[in-house]
Image (tube, rainbow, N blue to C red):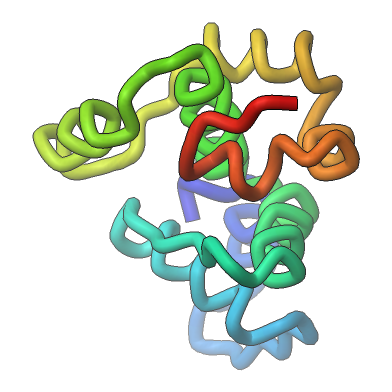
Length: 132
């Protein structure tokens, strides 16, 4: 729960033995659950709707590290950084990093995740450099 203030607050209010019903897309939530449990995830390259849903849920549930990672990685790749180099860094450290400089630069350039979808930077820009 330390990866999400939303869930941390939810579980702090009631015993952990309770059952919770979270009415969201199970495929999108599964990606976020994997991130919260293991600090790793696979975003769908071809399913724009699912990619967008995952980011919307991450925002709703305040999974900031996930969102910051997507922003930072996208910005770095759009600046010409080799995605394989980025993945090697992640593998070496066994978890996604939070790179606030690149995430802040992403916000400055694309005005946030929603605008990055509108301009076509996301989702493809997360995977490869995209000319717009």
